[in-house]
Length: 149
Ligand code: CA2
Image 1: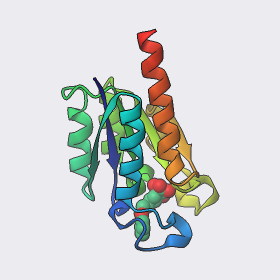
Image 2: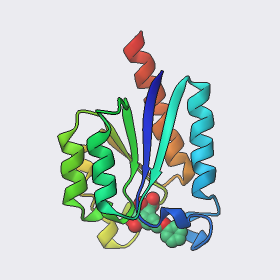
Image 3: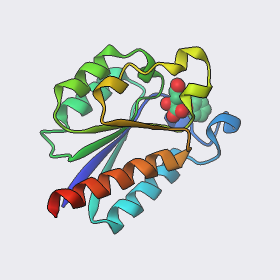
Image 4: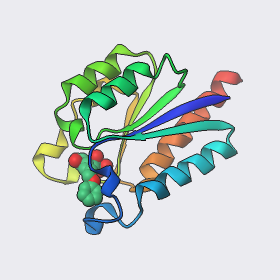
């Protein structure tokens, strides 16, 4: 069975509990549950990791190929905007990474407009709330089906 890794960066554990006007009322557990259900329907196993620590995310990215993940869906949160370590880890692995954001980072403060990871990911989906993750998952489902056709 194909498997994917969903990685959530710093503070995303607070989803649904703080700043609902920006990030909504959906919790991270809700998002993971929706992803797991759709992945299962498509015959894909999904693993999840949230961390507030850059190195933990770097380790998870480095380990993704060894663990056999076909894709990584990554919301690097604030690290998106400045983590060269996460960018380098993505660039170092052959596993395709899809960058997602709940909010439209391009409509927000200037410092959020730039993503240091965008040049090394497969693509970016931003601004659709939890559906940013679901859209990324649909891309994964289609790509995996194409690879088998
Ligand atoms: O829109 C996104 O998904 C972001 O990656 C979220 C990050 C932010 O730094 C990026 O610019 C855009 C922040 C995640 C923090 O999530 C919170 C959730 C609830 C309360 C406080 C923070």
